[in-house]
Length: 327
Image (tube, rainbow, N blue to C red; front, side):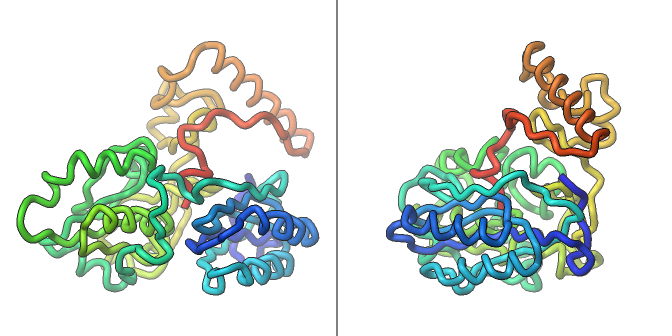
């Protein structure tokens, strides 16, 4: 993907969006939405489910604006959450609108986050909530995300996937909440979507005082001054930036294109790291045959770059599905 650029200067506008809403017939919404995207030369991926919409799209400023106008006319999407960034080149090869069972996969049936999520807490009020010793703070993200940064006092569930969160909570519930009056539970994620679903899950499990960070970590890093921040490290993001810090400044991590985990400078110095092929975290997870295939793909990527063209190859197996875990 191309490097990010300030929105005002970039020819390509990138819009990451989601909304929990009630779509009685998401299949009926698919073709008109896909047509609107194609008419305006938009590329990316949008997911539709009975619980709402989620995805990232890119195109011209006017084209993105017209597609967002279309999306805001969908049921319950008037106030859809959209995060904008810029790119010098188009970061996606094609446009897909996919029908899914869930827009972020938890596998817990009809939780209805649109109406039963926890209490929103704005970034400027978040520090006070999580500094309270009577508040349990839970990071709802995956283990490889938490590894490069999280909030002070946050519990790391060490879950490889968001699908694992319900089992983790049910196993740890007694230890976390104890007996008698339940403590407050504050949860957070990258951009907000997993927070809303996980708080709806806890409420369905009978936990009453549940809170989540409005706008997620990204909104917190964007708005809370570093000198007041309780964030430690960097925040993994599911795009070409890989990680960001305070003020959404570009982070220091690269990406292993074999397993989609973040890699540090130390990881890149390891003999187990080979660009596009392996990193210390995934080397033992792959076979020699798989690494040979990745190596060939990397060679084709490099040849395409020299020739000034995009290489569109098969999607590599990833550590986490973007459809399931992206915020």
